[in-house]
Amino acid sequence: MQLTFSDGTTYVFGEKTRTLTEKIVHQQTPFTTVSQTKVPNVIDQTEAAAKASVRAAGLVPGRVTHEVDARCEHVGVVLREVPGPGATVDNGSAVDLVIGDEPKTACP
Image (cartoon, rainbow, N blue to C red; front, side, top):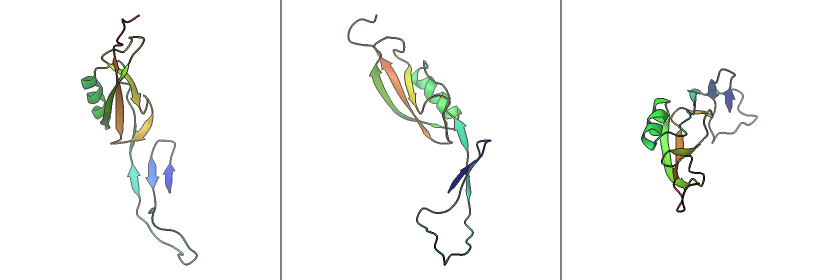
């Protein structure tokens, strides 16, 4: 069971492999606190700068992929990040980066 409070604090109780029956009247299970943070906005940053910003937020850089930027607005920088900027995630979560590539035809 997971409880999330309005201040962002999350408590996780129980074990996934345990089920409750009528025979279990009371059982104490230790809980852990899961700290959370917001994903920083790294759009338009270089890959190196984006990775540094992600690490500074207590997160880890995830997969880096490339995608053609047909509008040529984000060539050579972060076009998109997953999860998106401002999303609340557990500390230590990965943030995937998509770097914009120039199209084979001329930019508009």
